[in-house]
Image (cartoon, rainbow, N blue to C red; front, side, top):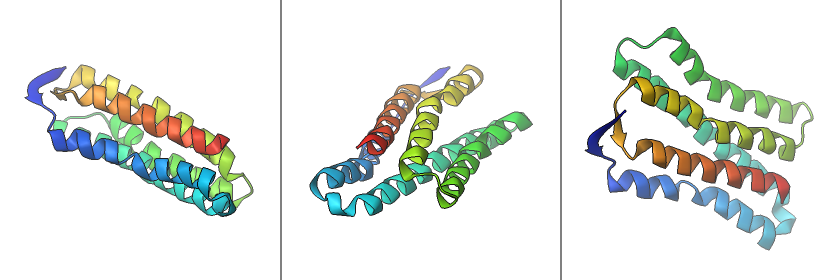
Length: 148
């Protein structure tokens, strides 16, 4: 359910600007191949931070509802736990590319939570469209880093 309120232009602009660090990492892989490991680590770190941020959004929506189910709060902590788990797996021997693939897939799937929330809560007009665009962009860029 969307309300008549519109998404502020700054939310859209800054949301898209949030894709720039991964664009920079991808460009760096092409232009500065000698820094491959550092650029992949930086891309993984940034994508993991943003994924964790999504969980914070869901947590905030649950608190704003005042009557959200415990399941929503459980789902809200998953992005941070998944990102932490992937970081741990990297430390235990997974390649950064494998972690980026898993993280990219998780980011691409994350709007499912927003779609479920939208059925039960009023959202600002344009929010779901922006979430789909940003998650598709971030997920695709994260997968691209894994494949470069």
